[in-house]
Length: 232
Image 1 (cartoon, rainbow, N blue to C red):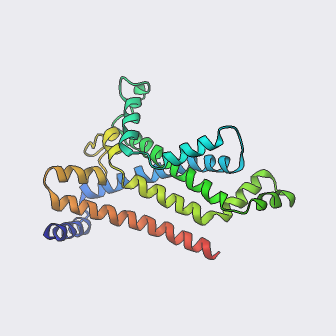
Image 2: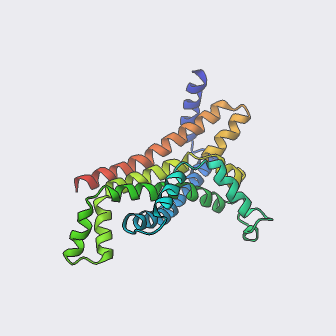
């Protein structure tokens, strides 16, 4: 309990004094996780829409694969991305291993099945007759898709919240592809693991507290948008 209290005090002190180390890794955490969430949205939403509106052989198998991907172990994703980006790997010439870009790739691969699966579930909850009603009223296919996405906007925002929560709290993949390099790829989760391994429990607790606070702020902002959309 004393360590917890010391950690909270240390977190307050670091934030109050604008500690450069903490500000640096906090900014990188937001940049990496925010970009990964955006990439996951751009990848996952079209897949979810396609699975909701298209019927093709093997669709059930694809949906099952997407649902399985929603629970991918981060360390497995990190291993696959590391093998691909390793200097002797197929994409080694790109020089991305141990860079923030590699971390974004790994986190986006973790999050996009969440966006795809949750957006598919959201669209499937709508009355199937709505689709044909919109088309019958003269809406184009794209207009129909956009209108149905608008109807599911609350659940889509929930998908974004889930994706962001998954990537900002992830540590295994980031450690494997980022290397936890100081002033380059160190984020709040990997810094917390490092300080814990060094026995700096107060600092580790402080970093963990800042991570929770950061995740809460972003989630609160998205939840506020969600509730405003509900009233509109």
